[in-house]
Length: 136
Picture (cartoon, one colour):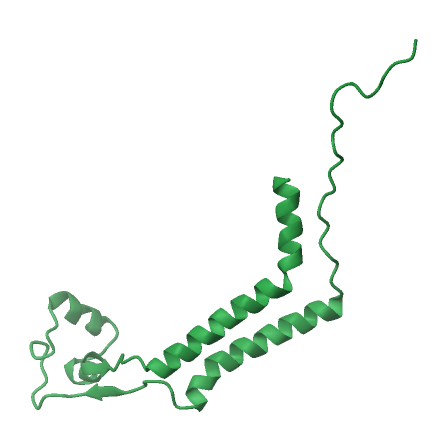
């Protein structure tokens, strides 16, 4: 009597996703390209003058720890690093302007979203393969 090996439903053999192998040159190119993009994104606002970079310092005529609104603990910390009230006044009273330039904010958002879209477009097929491997 012959055995019937096909008892019940057949299981479909799973193929596991194997990502494409990237050459060493491709990896170096990707790394250098990302470094250039990051450098440009960080430097471009400085070159175009889109940074706030404005500070104001209003030092009173008489400088004491009380006019600088420094308590005893703060005074002790300044003393530890050898700075008196006159030297500390510049550090304490310098105020930074945190006004956000809408143009630079929009530009930054476009760069970040654009990069995200590019990454998704280039790796769309790989994402689909991994998802089908895990959930099919």
